[in-house]
Length: 340
Image 1 (spheres, helix red, strand yellow):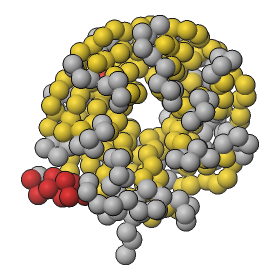
Image 2 (cartoon, rainbow, N blue to C red):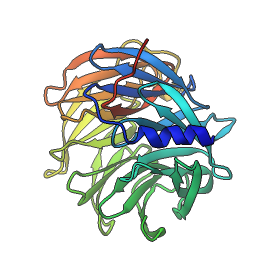
Image 3 (cartoon, rainbow, N blue to C red):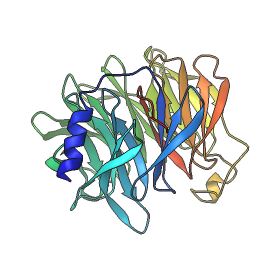
């Protein structure tokens, strides 16, 4: 372990390249696909532990940290650290007694990550160089799942599926400031680029809630049918929401606080239903990733084993990228995998 983390420290100081790699977590395959975006194909696959659900990439693109959520029968309790250029898992960080890690973001120091832990309803701070949990902050709510972070204000926002709420946490003081009801099944979460507003997708309520990010006051509730499960904000403030059951992408204008367009994004190729009969026939689009230039988005279709690339604005499909079994989490790195 000591040698592995020495390698991690060295990697952080390498220079950025100009390549582009999309990392995709394959939940049913315990792996991460590394896709060369110039070639449009998977060039390597790194092993993780059970149920890789979310991925965070360091600011220089060198490292990816993956939350190993586990399976329904077997809760996960670890993080996998992947060196992008080598496409290798170089360390595994145990989080016990904390289990079912899910949402994750890198902090600006590129050494620490924030991770939600459903099993203990908490937000963890983890030092990936030392491989240890350095802080535990209770969310005060149940099934704490997805995460957004304002690095300037040092505030974290956690969507809590079980309580249908969002928690506001002061990371600097390591304390829970407040929590507010959002809607049944609060899961997807996105902080607006101006950091003034917070969006939360309530999958069981078929709504998206808009909050004042500073005080956590609810400002609006927008109907978004079809199991809205993820939210992502573009640089211009436009909010994108995937609905897993209806296989649609909703475009929300922040000024109007309304859906301005709904795009059918379902894929004809589907594998076994992963959410039950209510999702039969859906390719189950979940994760959203926005390209750094804001011109493309990628959507992971968990029941089609593929990632769909769309052009922002026209929303036309540019290509399909094949992945492993049950893709969901995605993250972008400017590094290129060094293939033999």
